[in-house]
Length: 283
Image (cartoon, rainbow, N blue to C red):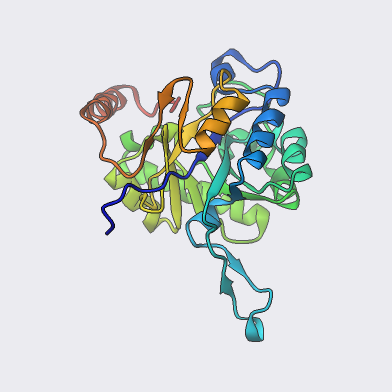
């Protein structure tokens, strides 16, 4: 392995894009006007927007392949990935339209219990899309991944409950879309070695965490780092991330790096609390 530091790859984490979000998600919501400015900053950066499939080498192209054989889609030299968690109501409408008009691909991770009539999740009330709208995301050029069923803290669940969260979300999306769903986002980024192994066993080819850090070509496939986009982040902040720099004066690290003692301690505390209270909302 090279001794040179890994080149940062920004993987941006968005949630809702709306003017008047519920209070619980407001910190992680950007307005449509700011979102448009963010996208224009991405375009101006010279980076190549790709999906998680392309970043992880899972995307395939058939154009020009002999006898219908698939050819790998190469990862561009300076990629950027736009991701969206949960499945808020704006996603299959104005948000997808803003991406499509700029020919920007993205990956959306959907919490199936929050968007499926008759099911429930741990997400607080908010305007959400529906599972039936998932194919519309693909028509806009977005890739769809799973974000579990209930949005629980996966690293605190019993193995059987963890397996259901991963399996049932994947199955519901595959039944709706008619094809494999190979990518996962951990709710609030909470994961552990056991969770990462379970994701691989459930058939996922990759998983994104949070960590508020740049990814890189050396990052872990089942713990891809993302940068959290908050309502205070400006187009200038996004431009700085595109250059591998800081936002709001806070320099982002570049993965991979080990969990901090604080992260490990917080995981132990949450696990103990969950054994008393049961599964809790990851947020």
